[in-house]
Image (cartoon, rainbow, N blue to C red; front, side, top):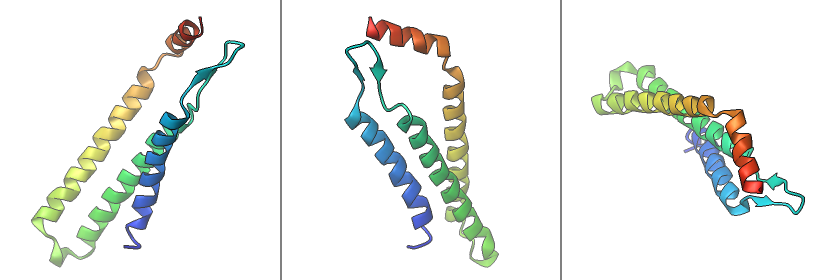
Length: 113
């Protein structure tokens, strides 16, 4: 159980970041400033990504560390975890690259006005 603690802690912290972002919410101050805990979103994505990467590395390392005990199902699950983590990271990076700073500021201006 101790070896899985390295992957469980970042995952739980990432989920806590998303939950706390939803609990805190966002508001517009009387002077028209939008206040939101935006830093929790990328932090949550980063922590969950780290957890997925560490889990895939640990499972692959465990499979290849003792090649006599390699199970075909465990090997397939490990490969699937690696592919899922790679696709997850690709989706997160493509989403972050698709954000346009001018459109974000226009949306913020429309919310305030």
